[in-house]
Image 1: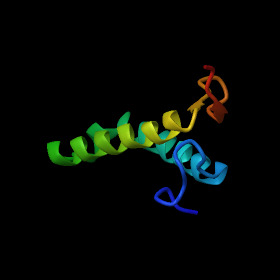
Image 2: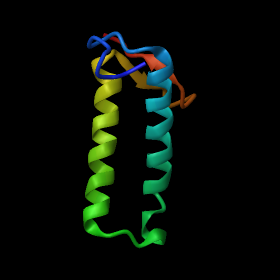
Image 3: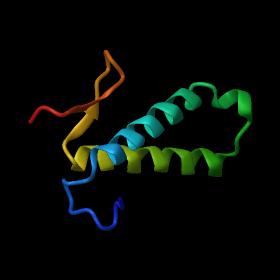
Image 4: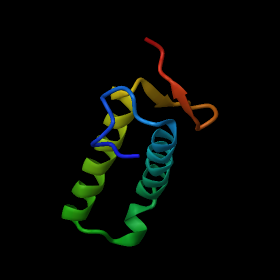
Length: 76
């Protein structure tokens, strides 16, 4: 499985689930970022990574359900 070899909109669901898990983990961390004393550059990289991960889901027609916190097909 590879993002590079997958045609846009046809990425394996396991990859999409991993992307969703990464988003949830990063979002959980960002609430506690002040505790970790990370620098501005690192915070910017983290924000950029989060944007890229959300893009992967959105391009493939998925989102994360806010009630169940699970991957789901986005409504058109």
